[in-house]
Image (cartoon, rainbow, N blue to C red; front, top):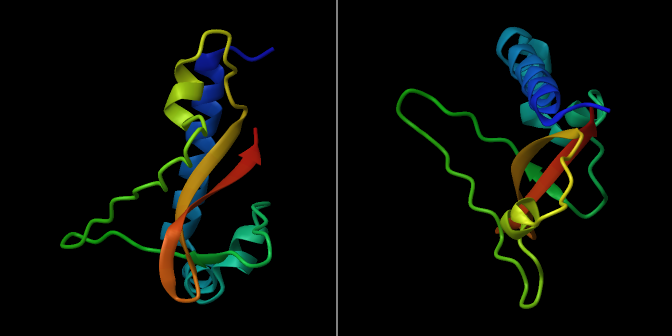
Length: 115
């Protein structure tokens, strides 16, 4: 069984592999910008039908902040789950992307890939 430290290292390594590919592979970056669902599927992150994925790249002058959708009334938030006693350590790398429905921002979607 992996300890939390190893899981964090594996998640960080997978995230950095993704970033390195986007930064160094112009063809992949272009596919990611033009057809994010297909480009993400190439690395094992499959997006369900009806979900619109938007990719935003930070620059020196523009920074993006991801604001997750508020939990529905009675729903347990991710923060509450993570702080629960006896909780689990996720064995996946997660990337947050902004999604929209019908062209307007509708919240967020988390793509996960098992470690």
